[in-house]
Length: 156
Image (cartoon, rainbow, N blue to C red):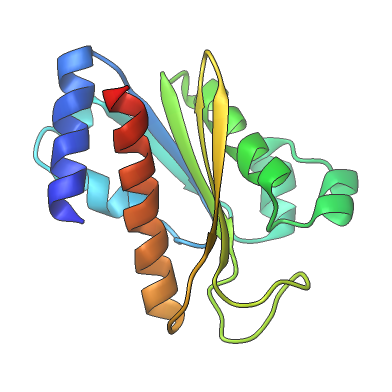
């Protein structure tokens, strides 16, 4: 994880771009790994951990209707979180994570069901994951996948 985060911070600095995060399933872990890199303050503007549906509504403006229709573990909510974080922090990019870490089901989804979204001014992209393992493994795999997905976007 550290080497991925180091590379991302380096690429963001080189391109003079900024990043924000909107986290649910990762509980701040994504922001933590990014901010563990020296110099990350030049490119990382901040993040919000939005674990409940109520906080997704309050901080990201996600409507109750969308949460009821799609649930918090959905592509549309992941994209809405990333887009709202990018706008709120006025960053060039934002990464969101939402899903079910387990054990057991939530929102009718099994443990390991995850959505990651990355928003820029130009577009928003999403990735669906179906992960296995215990709660910590799912959360760590989500962080690694979010960093790797963003790295591919930055390099294109």
